[in-house]
Image 1 (cartoon, helix red, strand yellow):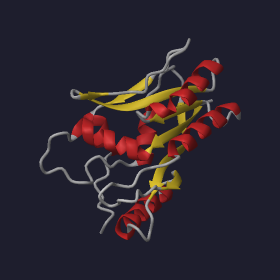
Image 2 (cartoon, helix red, strand yellow; image 1 turned 120 degrees about the horizontal axis):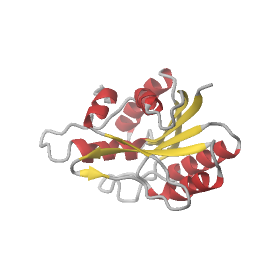
Image 3 (cartoon, one colour; image 1 turned 45 degrees about the horizontal axis):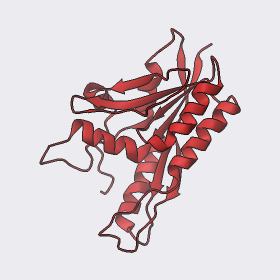
Image 4 (cartoon, one colour; image 1 turned 180 degrees about the vertical axis):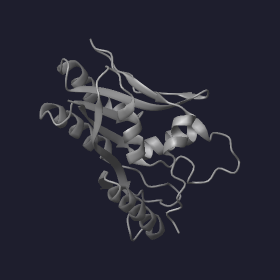
Length: 203
């Protein structure tokens, strides 16, 4: 029987890290550079066998901040189109409202609580045996306690893995301490090109 792989994607973090890793100095960098297809990314990660067992994507979960429709209607509309695409492809989208500072738009809106939600879901999924393997794609160190809990609490399955973009100028992953090493899938520019999404959702 194939291992059930659940993919947890920190949407904004994965997008921003792709831009740093693969589009760091381009003067013509477009806002679509760094976008990705979550379902294609999930299938790619599930195909990267680490134990010699078959792996099937059980679920792809994307965590994202949601713009305010009144404060930023254009970004909100694009965000909703993108989320609708992800949902139609079979992903589960988990969203929380963005926090807007008093001096917005000079200071951009920020995600609030999405990392906590992702952490809770990873831990709860392990306790409930909701997956055999969880792959967390993020470099946010706020997720470290949840990852270490799963890695050090369980022997065999469920098991947790990490994923991060990797380039000559950017090699980052969440550091994990404890008795058990946590495997990290380092995805390069060729991998990114397999899952890139050049759609302009503002149109």
